[in-house]
Amino acid sequence: MKLELNHLNKSALAAILFICVYHVFSLMMQGALFVSFVFLCAAIYCAYILINEQNISKKAFNKDYAYLVIVSWLALYLLLFTTNNQTSSLGVWFCILILCTSILLSPAHSLRLNAFVLLLYWVFAFFESGRTFFIFIESALALTVVFLLSGIVQKVIFDLDAKLNIAKETDSLTGCIQSGAFKDELEKVVQLYDRYKTPFSIIRINYQSHFDTEGDLQIWLKELAHLYQSRLRKTDVLCRFNSQKFMILLPSTNIKNAEALSLDLENCVKAYEFSFKRKSSAVSTSPTLVFSSETFIKNQKLNDWFEKIQS
Image: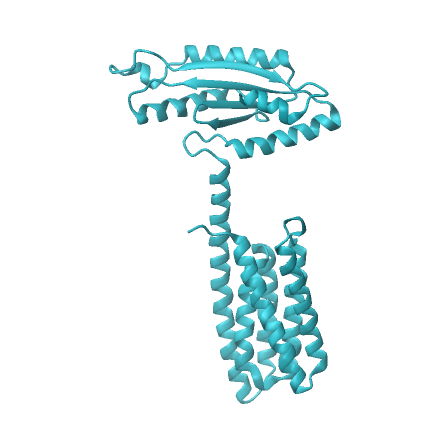
């Protein structure tokens, strides 16, 4: 099952909205109008963010999440200071908000905010006396456990999300980027061209293989990608565009230099001792590689130019 952080964000926002709306009506019936107003402000802001989450062009920024959780924590602490007799029930809301903070904010920011909130709770607990002191200490210990667990879970989630993003952009066999990420890199180079008129080129490499087994093909593709990468600059972008094509994006490169590099790569492939050549059962016909290079010219439409290269 695919895990998406966007779904987690919406769940956390929905939980905060529930907390705020619940306390708005609860406190209004108790006559605590000021604290109820703070919860109402948090509820309205949370609803605003949730609505924008449905609109791709108005996605919430991290600062929106930060403002929301800060207002929500402020409202909970105002409630804590004014209703000491509800310590046990407030502990549940504190635990939920700690989890929501860990989901909505980055690991560094959520760690600082949750640690500050927890420290404030411990300080408040030590200033209590009598029976409520032990109730606060018990709640503080529970919040500490939730704080530690939420930090661990958050780190696991962000690590998984980072690995998923890498998997989306990278070909697992060759280590090259895939077509979607290549188009993103192309857009960046085009922006530089529009601003500084810096030329850029693309080398297209079509290949046809004649291997008997899938394993031999995979080994050849790995070696081929490694060979290409060893001849490129750090700024050049190597992409396995599809099952029969590599593309190389060359920023700040004119047609003359692109053709020279294309010829160099072709000669390197001819001279390289691939693994299949050393096998006694090697295929009689080597894979076919066709190199071509194109440079973006002024007044061309990028989409038309790129479509031409792909064909």
